Image 1 (cartoon, rainbow, N blue to C red):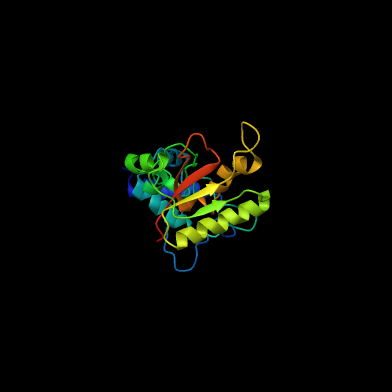
Image 2 (cartoon, rainbow, N blue to C red):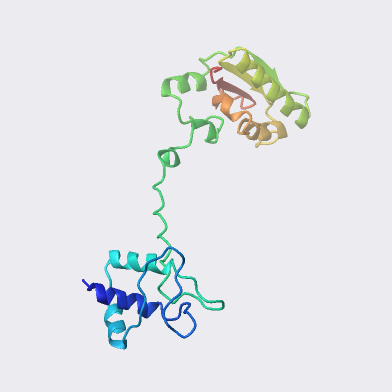
Length: 218
C-alpha cells in the first residue's frame, strides 16, 4: 500500500502534461475541486507508477476528472479509466434448443411422421381411418388443382373433419403425372403443413389417392 505522499506524487506525475497556470505554478482545477497540486521528483514518480490498488486508482481517476486540459492538449495515457468489459454472452435459451415442432418437419406420403402415435398411423396407412370427404383432381390444370387443394383442406379443417382423401391420378410415367409430383410440395407449404398430421397411400396399387389425417381445429 502506498503512503498518502506517494499517491499524491503519482497524481502529480501523471498530471504533468495537463493544463497549467502561466508560469508553471500548479494545475488549473475545475471550480469546486479541492484536489492538492504540486511537483514530484523523478524518484517519486517511478515509485508511484509501480502499482496502485483499485481504490487508489479510483481516487486518481476522480482527481483527473476535475481537470480541464489546455487547448490542443490531451489527458496523459492511463488517466482515463478503460471502458467496462463487455458482459458475457447469455447462454442459449431453452426455446433455442427445443426440437422443431411437427408442423415444420417435412411431410412425406407413406412415411410415418414425427408426433403421431403408431396406432393412429397404422390405421391411416392401412385404410382403417375412413375419409369423410374426397377431392378429385382429374382434368384440372396445375394452378387450378393447387387452388382447389388449398380451399379443400382449409374447408375440411374448418368443418372439423379428421380424414380426407385427395385423388391426384397415377400419371403416365413411373414418377407419376405432374399433379402427383407437385402434390407433396403443396402439402409442405407453410400454409398447409400445419393442417396435416400424416399422409398415406392406403392401397399400394393406387398411389394416385392420398389419405390425409388432419389436425383438430383449435
